[in-house]
Image 1: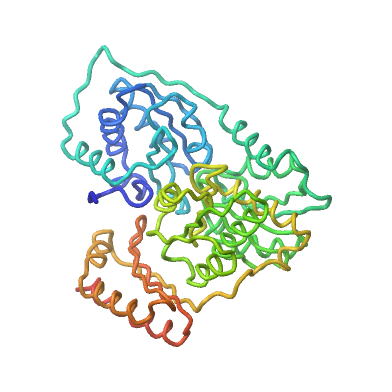
Image 2: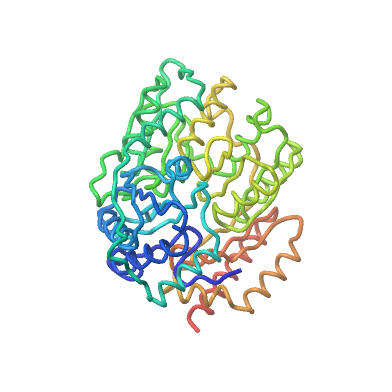
Length: 451
């Protein structure tokens, strides 16, 4: 596997106006992508989220591409899943999404998306990094790209969502709280639900460039939970800034974990015939009880991948599956979207709930979860994250623990691909072992990071 210096599990990310999220880096990235990828159509599409620095990064990317003779289509503020869904219809070599996803406003990032809607592999991003480092770009006075605007994707995306719901209407008095994270879904998800007949209570739906993900959205669900209780809503949904993560709560304001949603979608879509006995995929950070539910209760094949939506999508394609996700909130339904899509996942969940004619609190949880220890160790830099991840001592400890708990649990030390954090994750059927091992690993990670 190619080693990446700046690209993580979901693009390159950092603090705006600090390397690598500078206008200089973004311009060089565009030049590199123009040389390596934009060799057919000589055209790219660029979308962005609502954070204050997105316009700045967009301008730098546009400058780089056009300087290399590549035309740019500006798509404006739309969710990442809208880009992955419609990029194949734009006649471009690739698309770029300017976003730091669930991170605070002062961060930003750039996701690179192939013209088939997939994320690029590590080898491709490593080649881009190499071109940036060499910085030997040439420019032609006779070959300068043009810039155009296409603002049609938003409505096409909403129409696709309505069609996915088979143009049906929601039950009368169906009230839903929607936390838009002051991000890309602010004027999309509430509108789609209103067109379906829902009584929508929208919160965090007024982006100002600085309030994206600020005490709201999928990473901060407290306001959603409280609002559902106060409003007596049927359920609540919270998305992240670029719309690829989702969190849902029931009618009592109780959060439904993503593993439960994966199980629910697998069950309801299997019962409806949509899944047709195809495999289900989640990551190694999914609760170990999910595997038993999928394989024993539903009788379906189940596969575990490394962390990251890209890995889930890749495994689904390899195994012919259409339902997958991870506990972070990425839910993938390949029948309706090319990547994690909060809106499509929510509509599929609503459809399944309505079909059962029950309240969400009468449905969830579908299964009892195993004991879990899950804590983050914050370190001083991404370099330290990589040092910890490479520690042979830690690898040996984790390997020995996994051998002891094999068949009854799982132990993972996972370096974040987007933040200076190490995730310590232990899950299993014995709560005392899980807690003790989790605390032991926390101390080991701290020692390794400080040496």
